[in-house]
Image 1 (spheres, rainbow, N blue to C red):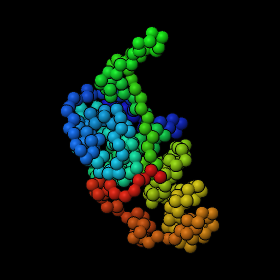
Image 2 (cartoon, rainbow, N blue to C red):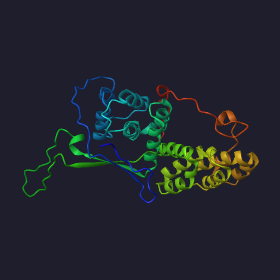
Image 3 (cartoon, helix red, strand yellow):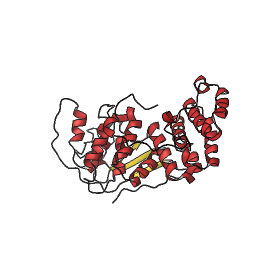
Image 4 (cartoon, rainbow, N blue to C red):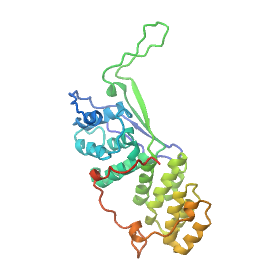
Length: 313
């Protein structure tokens, strides 16, 4: 049975649920050993997309920590199209992006996946919708992820006894990090500018850091909006409690009303960093000087996108 996801997520049901009743049989394979990084060596040895999904579900945080987001992109590229078709590529990408191994570089990771061309537009749209949910809930057969059949019995007759069989299910929850929210909100708005009000409402229910990241993403894609909607979004951004979001809103206000109006608004801000805002040059913003719209972005090479510091904030 193919993976089912209810998209888009209803406003009053902020969870995206993946329910899988049939998972592929996990292949048995010999695991090689490497001295440099046993965790990535173990994952890289997997040659089947479904098996890689199983291993990521089996241990979402047990693969150490790495700032090399190219590892995840290489894993996605190496097994794409190798599974039975039960688990889509967007699902594997979601597991990689929410794995704690690359939790410090999620902004660079999603940018690398987006720019790599590995996923189709439909896959990226599905991935964005999952990141806009408050949390992603995955339900799967317990023995699929733990084929060793853990013994949960007890020698104490008075203690609870658990029976694990093929009908036993397990659940795991993934909450996307704020940089993933920002990317998802920007993609969703660019894909359908008419969703602005729904996106403002649905992302407004997220926890503060996540909500603010999503608002930042909407401002990133504000060039897709008509002037009236862009002004409404700018007003929302200027009311945000986070200074970096207000600075982005000032950039958009500058495009609409010119630098003088934006500078007056900046000088009235209570935050020193916001008061220090100055209009950016077209070269710095990547915007076309004549239209104010975003200039086309260069394709990002995922192998060169793993430097720099972490990006959880």
